[in-house]
Image (tube, rainbow, N blue to C red; front, side):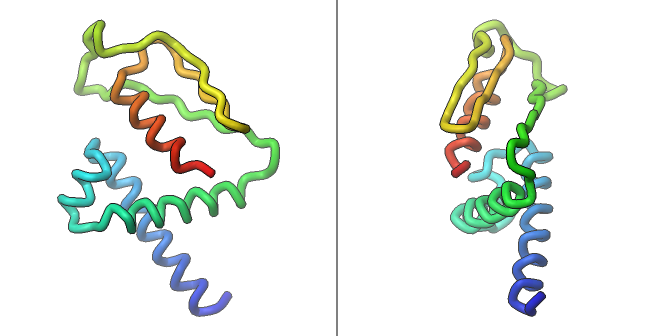
Length: 116
């Protein structure tokens, strides 16, 4: 592996930690970047690199599953939740159960807009 590739892998590992920290913080990308003096464009650039690397490493015909649960510290009021729905975009199929929170749906839709 070249020095350039090693440097890129180290940066990617650093950004993957940032992605995990942001997710654990519960902050939006905008708020997290502002609080940590990061540029949003850099955040999304490295996020796209991380996703591409994950897709390359994934065997073909592999499906993924991610369970989204409401945050433990918040309780949903009836107007805050939505009925179940299935969304298909190309080769992506997203099934959402009854009771998903509007904020969760917004986060999911934001994330899939960056999937190529």
